Image 1 (cartoon, rainbow, N blue to C red):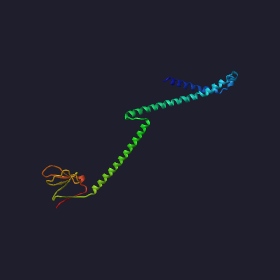
Image 2: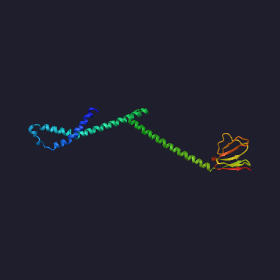
Image 3: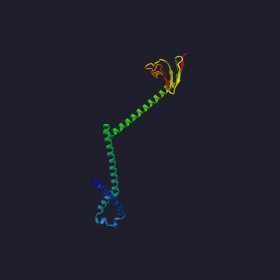
Length: 204
């Protein structure tokens, strides 16, 4: 605690005690105490009364309250300055706190714009994927198989039993042939998720 803080506390305590005392003295007329004119001190009494009005306990308390508000505000500003110094060090910023706030506002605006653009792009992509899926499901492809080719249904695949047929390297069309095992009689199949809309016809 500094000397000014100690003095402020003493002034506050003295002023709080003086308020009722001065109110009581103010109710007593000057004639009941002494004749100021007879003593020739009427001018000094007026000066003392004026000083008493200016340095009243109420005014002292108001000044001390204002001083406490200033100290509180200074502490808040110092705390904000410390935070700004930390942010300026972390982000390697230059300029005032106002410049930093403007930079933050522009960055938030940029990120919000980027997010909205990405959301729009993702929505367009999902619509395109849905359109392609609808077109694929609506399309019908006819496949002609060799005569007497037996067909077998399985939970995940449509099995096509053929002899000596190997898949073509790099084939990625809707009808994709894949080798299941490397025996003399190879078992080839079509992916079930790509077989939608495919009519399998055994040749005669």
